[in-house]
Length: 468
Image (tube, rainbow, N blue to C red; front, side, top):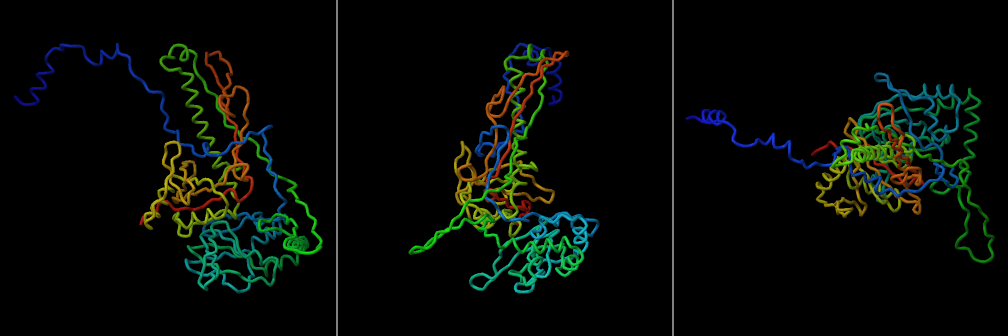
């Protein structure tokens, strides 16, 4: 008899015992709590120091600063033609407070589009600086002479950056470095000659440029803050200078943001299907988890208070070779004292690990709540999947000094709100509708503040898809 014939013979015989499908009707199943794939480690929420805010607003008072014009320039691309948005010329230090739209529009029209190949020199050290460069696309290295006569990379500029702005105010300015294209670059150049021609016809621009000469007379420290006059190393009865600490007259205020949802549960479900697990509790638990995920996403990406958007441009770095290498993280760490943590997308951490493997380096790890977290120079690198990855497979790495006492980055919340189940997170019963549906308002209030600019730094345009 073949195997098929044996199977058919067994199937033809009558059943002699209770089947498993019928037996399950009398059995009590063992159930798990509702699972949720969206839940992540949320290291930012766990590691950020949270400060209680009264009145829903936190004001950051700083010393008076004279620094202006440290933003990036935005462009419009039509086919292969690139134009700068006229109002964006106000990001240049010399045009920061200038607001005549007609003059700015004419200046934008005078910008000359130029294309450069990798390795091309845009400006040479020691030559006259007679034009301003606006980098629409690509990367440019600033190269100077090192202490031993060799070339040294002073910095890397990327999309939206500008250089040569000293040409606007100083006719005798020279290039103090060589600007060389790392990749193919699209640049808009504004010659000083064109600027002077427009200033001859525009009285407002001419007066504005004349007033700029008074700005350098303001004594400021290396951070752009008003200098505090001191005397040191003197002898005898030398007159001691008097001074005072001036404050920013218009300090920034952070208002608490909100994430909310209305959870609806039918009373029949809550009454009849409440064992062995409370349906209302499980629904609230998963809703709160989703709110916390959104909270961390907003702390990273929100345009008003998100870390990626609130980092000062002089604290933004570009990787020298595209991929995140040890040298890039070293440069990121040197921009601030006491960096407490690094945040990176898991794929960026993987790319950094590949670079370490190429050099034969093994990062140290530390134990954080039972998790082995990699470190660099003793600073833990926490994974954060809320940091975006672009279509070009690039992302960012965030470095932070945290805490109020260290003038770092802090989280903002307001504890003690009505019906609070966690600090700054409440669940309010809203009643039962005519359809017998219960409603709960779930709310969380939060924000983040950067107390001083160097508390936050970002390594941008990190390539994560290069394998070699």
